[in-house]
Image (cartoon, rainbow, N blue to C red; front, side, top):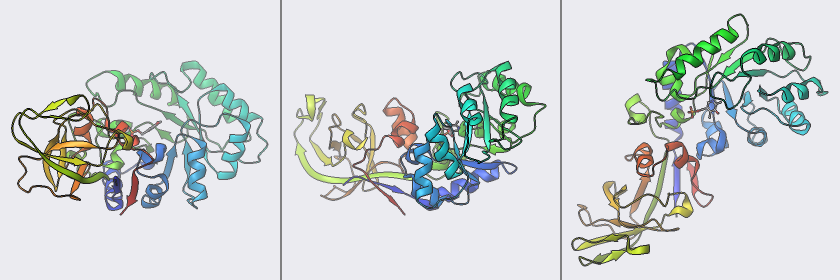
Length: 356
Ligand SMILES: *Cc1c(COP(=O)(O)O)cnc(C)c1O
């Protein structure tokens, strides 16, 4: 019923656009969380010309290898025990290293493999990474290990690149520069927002996620503003149409009242598909390509849509677009009081994801 169409041509187009922005950088395409809901393996195949992939967890990387995808793959959180380290060795993963325990694991490694590692500096986000003097000590310790390729590569993550008016990113870049100035090795700093706002953060490797999917991380803008094309379109269709008199109410809690004679369409999509329940009346949807709005609360499997004013009265089976082509997910995220990342990642198991 509900389907998410994934446009592989748009994915490739977006990768090309990003390469033009960062012509001296290689691209580590971030495809964690099922490629932001788009389908891990399908997206990896469409982006086969990426220089590397990045995933959060070992299992995600193993899914790529099981599908026969041999592109270099970075584990953004690294490995946490011996079993994961062995799996990473067998799968030839690159490791982000951000704790002393991970260095100990590599010290004890008996896999015979030399890992490409990315040593992570906590440059101010206070999530993962070594800070200040600990970073230098970790670098020395890693560099001495036979299980680690030389030189160690250098990595940090930006906390607020989507808010370029803040001093945060400049501070982080200065800390990264101070910690790494005299070290060799490849460098990687910028996520999508970093790529957009801070050319000086492009370094050897950029790490775009959201932009690859044609979506902007900067509030108030959409991917198309940067020449990108949306990759996912979430669709359903009309399963009932009815006429209401003024004063009648729609859906659970009667949260919407017809203020005039109203034609209402019911579409088969709801929070059971990952279309958030907090989307209120008026949230834009496209019916037969025409824009109108929700009427009443989002149910588990259905929504009501006010179609009174549409030029073409909808019939059963007519297409309804919830976000994507013609209806930016960035706009829906504002209505849902969240970020587009969460909407994309949040589509449920029930949604059929189709690459085209
Ligand atoms: C998720 C992630 C990215 C990609 O972020 P976007 O904002 O989607 O571009 C880059 N680097 C790291 C470490 C990440 O966790």
